[in-house]
Image 1 (cartoon, rainbow, N blue to C red):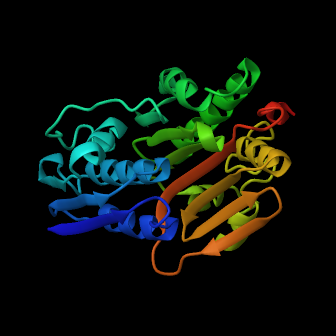
Image 2: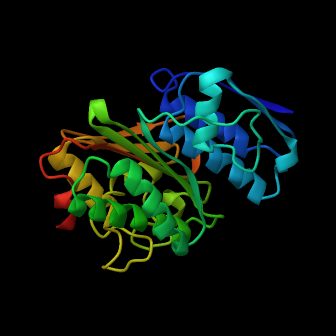
Length: 286
């Protein structure tokens, strides 16, 4: 049996630690999985997306049977919070019914496997991420998220992916996470002869540049570039991880981070939106 223990809160569980733990889940080979979530105080959107994508990938590839997943859940309100997030929907039946907390908007983990899922997820996301945006901002936000979903379905060589989000109105922040367990953007990009000779760091350094795509089509490859442009203009952050490399864009910098001992096998996109921006998301239309 493989045991994976999560503890602390979003502020204490770093993205590196999260990726390492999910790499263990994805590496399971016909063993039972024991998830200890009893000490979790808060599961961020990126944690929810990563954990569900890792489990779904292992199940889809026949390395993990849903009946062999055991969970030690938090008690009380923390347990109800975990249930509301739907991180383990279909893999774990919680012992109690959930109670909705209206103080924080959230989008429970949403699986997608085709472009047909975009409208359903867009409707759910709008309630969370669009709560403090004008109608134009909501529309552009959902267009960009839809393009990211399409990229996953089109290029990831996997079952699909997971989208989730959460908003903190008092902080004017919404975090949206999209994760899949596929081949990853680095492998996908090397299908384009223009990028086949680049190493991992070089590919990730250009992943959010305009018209950079595995297909070579001039009309594609703009979704991440539009997001990066918005972050540069209005703030927030955009992190893209594939394999052992993470590219993070903020208003003032672009940084590459190399994780030596474990990586995210698919593609992970985490967008922190500053919902107090003076013109929410309008720059994405350019």
